[in-house]
Amino acid sequence: MATLQRCTDLLDRGRIHYTHAHHANAYRAREVAAVEHLPPYKLAKTVIFCGDGFYAMAVLPGDCILDLVELAISLGLQSVRLATEGEIVRLFPGAEVGAMPPFGELFNLPVYLDGRLTREKHIVFKAGTHGDAIHMRLDDYVQVARPLIMRFAYPEVAVS
Image 1: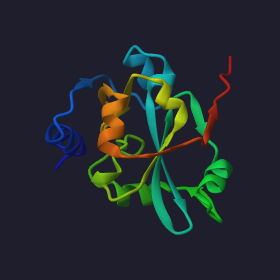
Image 2: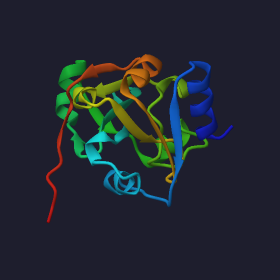
Image 3: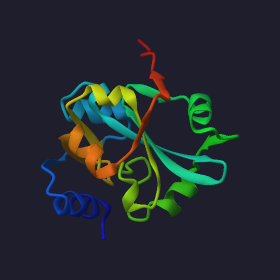
Image 4: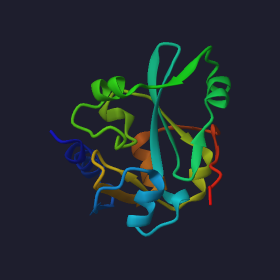
């Protein structure tokens, strides 16, 4: 089953209101935000990491960068690194690399949400492809994904 369908099935089972949008392929967080006509901080990007032998999802604003040191300290881990492309392909069958949706339940992974996103009423995220996005209320996302909320990202400095 395609990842998009798995996402919408999960939301439908939970009776969660969401909107599915299809757009031209966009790969970087700021590109997705632009095609979805929203500021990058409202886009929830999913970054996969490996820490002390387990994989997990870090979900952070599209205008931020994952702080691996802060993440390791917050989780009490000895080492943390980004997952490789090969690991992501294995962990997310049916999803395009870089378009993983932030639902750990679908992939048996824990989810960590950066606290900056809790300021938002609505978020948008990729839904398995570089051309599909889901719009939904943050409260509903937290209800479904049950992430651990903490701080582990910092704002990306825009280059002019």
